[in-house]
Amino acid sequence: MIGQAGLPAALLTPTGPELEQARDLIGELAGGGYAATYGALGAVASGMAGEAIRALRSGDVEAAGRILRQLAAADLAACELRDRLVEQGPAEDSDPALGGLDEVVMRAQATAADTDRDPLDRARADATAHAIARTTYVLTGRQIRMEGNR
Image (cartoon, rainbow, N blue to C red; front, side):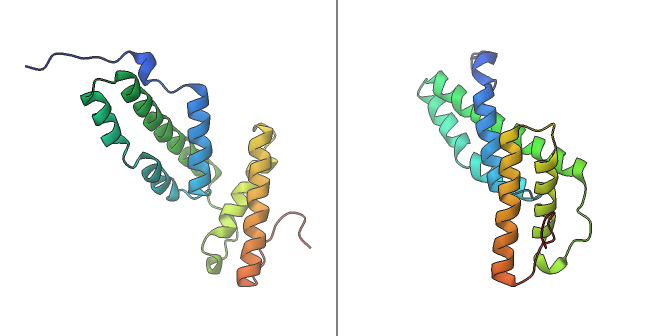
């Protein structure tokens, strides 16, 4: 019979900085795409289960807790991003030739214009929208309509 070895909740609950780091990483990897959040979570979580198991086997409870907190933070960040994308709904007048990049730009613009958001998030979203629009234009010659474009 295996004895119970419980980990304290404090070891398993992501801290504010851990959650912010996970949000930044998931947001950066997902690029504003709903389906991409699953791939982003997979990329972040890859190998974490094995690391946690090795830490537990070696008796390093703190390392196991840290790994599980990071995994929980990444999962929560991906869920939050998907929820925000669902709330925003599909972008209007999407150009199928752009493969959804115009939708990503429109969502990023909406985030940049949202005064309830953190100023840093707004600035990142604005920079992302402009970078994608410029890159798309250079690579395809198709312009993504953006507020302020002429």
